[in-house]
Length: 275
Image 1 (cartoon, helix red, strand yellow):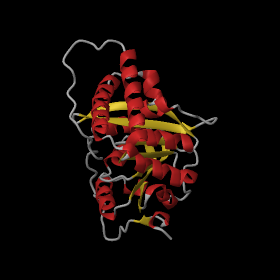
Image 2: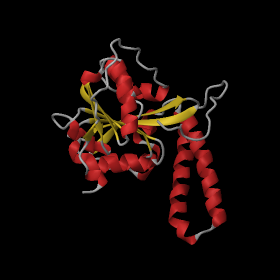
Image 3: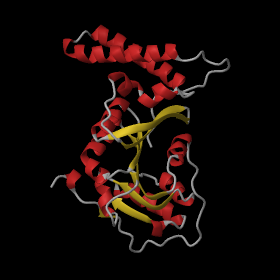
Image 4: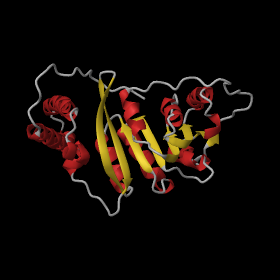
């Protein structure tokens, strides 16, 4: 049995006392706040890769879900989440499991949740989690927060029979993040290459921060194309062609936007932050 196939391991709680006086729920940054706002009237919400447990703690404190599955591949990280959630008095409403990906859902009595959050990972990692665990989703709403390689996450959503319902660009700590919300598709969805690279919901909705997102994307892609032309490696020809198409899609999207409003531009730091 491989590591990915291992059943979830319940966090040992013997000898760990719950706080007698509930504390205050943690403050969420704009990224986690936007993700939390998508969770409404959920019976069971699964936070896959919960890390510090801030999101789950707020979901419980605001009664956005009645029960929480807090799961992480790291027992140390999960212990930290348990202390935080326990200090708020929500331990009885939470199932804690050390598990990889969606195998954590096996720790729930019914083996399923109606909302699944997977945030703060690379797009290839999120895509792998979705593909490996698709049979365990059973129609759950997905809230995804890929840090990189967003097209791979969108492609995986399509491959498992889901459809993107919303995409949001949020700014937290001076950095831009992308959040996706997906539901099972009524009929098969086939996104175009342009939609996979730019986002079908972003293309349709054109939210305010998308201009900043596209401008940064254009700058990074232009630099990548220039570097690849300079390297002139034959084996990179296919990759170069894809990056050039993505740059063209990005520039076309920028041209299609309404003129930018006057005022001081928002300052965005380079790089991505983890969860």
